[in-house]
Length: 394
Image 1: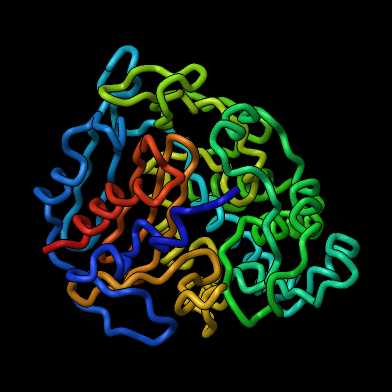
Image 2: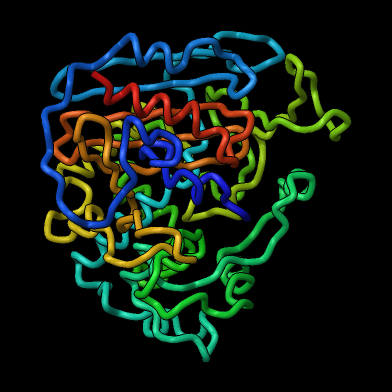
């Protein structure tokens, strides 16, 4: 599916020059920037970033900020539009593409165990998956989105998406649909952020371990880190336990639409996430993702020797000549106000936008969930961007 929110802003946690030129700088490759001391947590700025919910752009938000100079937690909005019960901290949500960080982490664990090589090829590990006329695609190129693998051609019209929201995909079918298209570019020469890369990475995990992707993420990361409220739903369309409802803005007259202020929305809480699988199916909480960020950055998830790709942007251009690459293997590099440098990842499912980020030394971490009414478009990032800026503001 079309991902309009990534191309325009890179990450809600990153600060795109086009949106915030006065306060931040665009990501500029792999060059080092000296880390500066993080300011004390600005509670007022953080509270302001989620005030006024429910609002036209979102119905709820849950934010956690922590680090060496203070911490803050805040919740705003309602858990659903019918009862208008206040949202509470700890609700589960769809983390979307934050899932990719977990997939990449497992692959890097397998590299550490000698079961995979970043220089090994997809053709070597998964013979027959890619067309015979495709060039060799390295495992490392999957992780940092320089593989050149294309996306499947599917409708990005929301009416079609809503009508097929319970449709189930298999990973093999998704990849097969994608590689009906020609390779986009010579592997390793450009960067194009696409779910296809992480789908193939998930299939590599299953082939090498002989167990399901879900089993490997659960036993290798969720349980050891203590993420007791997080899980991978498989083919289930529901979110277990306490969670906020997710809504998508639609035109008047759209099937099942309900009035929401001056607008209309449909409830997208229940939907299949098999179309994102290892790229975006994780269900989690802000507390669990905070645990994960701290464990990952401190070397307790991926061994230190294999962790460096997660903090390295490849020295190539973005696909289509749109500036420099910005993504690492699993994350993206962020240049923040005040000279701070961080790494993070955002994700979005219909009705749910999420993000994680931190300075490499963990002097500041931020995790958020926003029940956005337009989570898959560039507009939703304004709220998330405000949260990220507030998390690092003086």
